[in-house]
Image 1 (tube, one colour):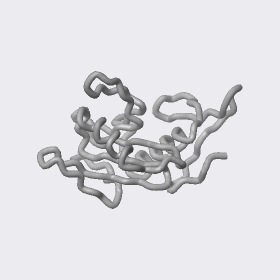
Image 2 (cartoon, one colour):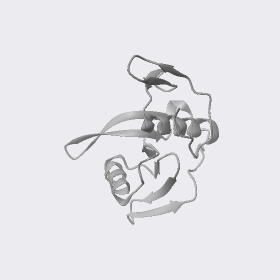
Image 3 (cartoon, rainbow, N blue to C red):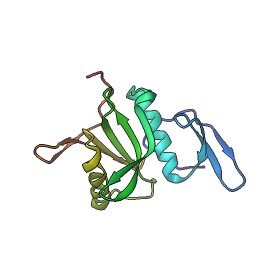
Length: 150
């Protein structure tokens, strides 16, 4: 069984494949390999939808993005109604510490995406910042903002 996280529980579907367990992803509409990072990603995805009320249609999972000449993948990204990145979420496995290197990694991703909010979570700790691109400031927030139409 996977580690209990500091996120609300949800009704997940797990099945055993030949090599490893799989968890059903409601966005990709298929079973994916249940790694410790995927466990955190699925919990945070359900938190975004069920608690913060973000519409599924505005969320992407593991979408490719380019930074300089490097191809990168974002764990979760919530878009605004104009199709621009609004919240960038980086998920780590529960045993992975959220260090300055992790913050730097997400900041680098966000230089090309320009999301207004950046979240880093390992399922136990969650950090959220509002980004002011004019002043290049990261303003820490106590929690991830809930969905609003504005």
